[in-house]
Length: 495
Ligand code: URP
Ligand code: ZN
Ligand code: ZN
Image (cartoon, rainbow, N blue to C red; front, side, top):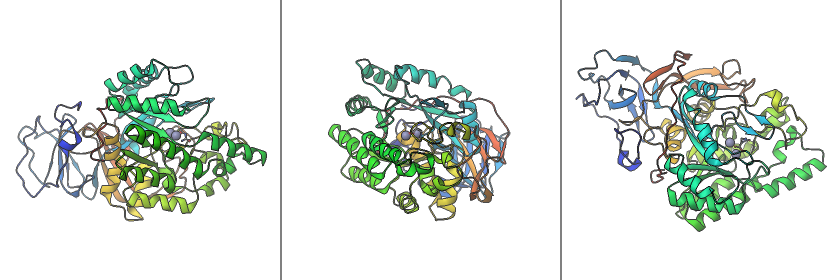
């Protein structure tokens, strides 16, 4: 059920949107209009065209033909000139770790810091993770993480996580879904940390399938990885400079195949995070064609960066799982963005710094893995794929905002500019040329993996539930207005 009474209850009820026609008849707002975005090109996943937006009380009231008069009562509305800009739904980052502890390391940002970087990058909703440490209960961890949402500059949703099975887990899962935490992250790797066995994966999927939830899963076969790492260690090649040789394509493919088989046995939906190889995506796409609700997330760094970075000056800064792949694989992965097989793009944001990465420079098994990226996800993907390779802005919105909202059960409150949706809006300069530097970013770390990358396109003004938070590239409102967004049962019919 939508949290917003003005919204339809299901994604289907909200579909079928068409660009506004030349009509200038004013809409019937539910409250006096207090914000107008005029003169831009609205981009939704299903259409783009010149249109103005009327907003009241933090909610989109109408998408209207350019120049439509503001209805009576809205005379004092703030008007933002979006001439020459794209007007898109704020980004929804489906994969963002905030203050994430794994092994001996905790990533360095909190909700305020992470969401500050997010809004600078055009993202207005993050989906974080509540991952139990050994001995912790999923429900309690989710409650603790959810309580941090109000520190954010923008809204957040949450993936719970199950690592170990016990008799209390089914009731915890039912309660989580009932409270609007409907996606549950699982891992087939990271033994002794967050790895779940196949029994636990199957049982968790089963309960979630009954309740309207969904497993989201990191797939790399742990036995294959441990064997590859053992051999690499024997060769003296277990340092960051050999990261790409320690986690094979085969490890990813094998785990995806097993998890798909489990999901198919149950008829359960499943979402694969950070898929990094064409073979893995093909398995998921084939399953979807057989009728399974199976989805692919790709993350920005796998779509842009390649394994040559492991041969550079700072290989540790690129240590992530799965690792960066060779250039041919990166190019092939990008093709799946064009052919529709990639459902969402996440950041897999993990805000470690170089000092943390360098505590164990010679052993990727204990080095913290993960890259900072919540702020660069949208600009880098827009630049590399829309500006340089001709991906349509609508497809960009689909993978960066609309589909992430859909698969996480927060559409149409998030991920669209449909009337009734939260007025999370990004005004985007598609022609702005700039160079990514650490100094120019706001993440709580000392590096970006995209240092020196020339980029075309960037967010200019970012609006969170009707409040202008970033204006002309400057943070103008640091009020911690974040809310936890409860999800409804996942509805995958439109994805
Ligand atoms: O290397 C990564 N991706 N670290 C973050 C945890 C995860 O696996 O998503
Ligand atoms: Zn992962
Ligand atoms: Zn992750």
